[in-house]
Image (cartoon, rainbow over the protein chains, first blue to last red):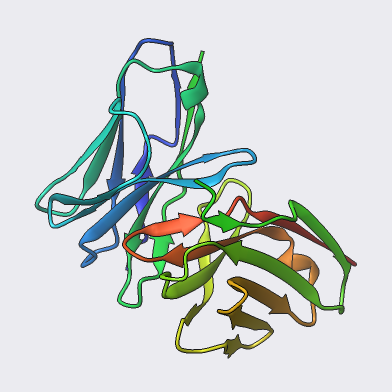
Length: 111
Length: 109
């Protein structure tokens, strides 16, 4: 099976802009979660989608949003970018035993 | 919201010795615990897990121990190999997955 894919891999944006990141889970996986990784903060949970519905949400401002499509692909959107949004954004699809399979991430740099 | 804490940001061990990575959590309702390994420029990869009904799970060189009364989780790697050098994250699951900040393990030849 192909693994979790994320596009783009790298992105540079300016403060105030918005960005959309994409994630395709492992075939057959219906749950997709998004995480933000910054140095010293580990992986911070953003949200989880299952069958096109947001199932859980972390403690991030409303500028961070997401959605999932009928083919389980998911997108994450960040509006009005701030410098502090610079991070590695990871998505993961969930296996049968709750283990997460992560994609390689999208490195977002906000200048 | 520090529900999961990895208090050691880094650990260095000699090849062949035991590596012990620690993790503390705050919520006794967590019922599933996992360890992930992350190499640079890659996403984390699942390593080993344990459910709250067990206190030990072993997979080759990797063993995870769970002490529910202390709300403490540990990962033992023995013998440690240079290829084990990576950042290790512990994670807990209730409704969603929560990760610690990670511990960078360096195994010296």
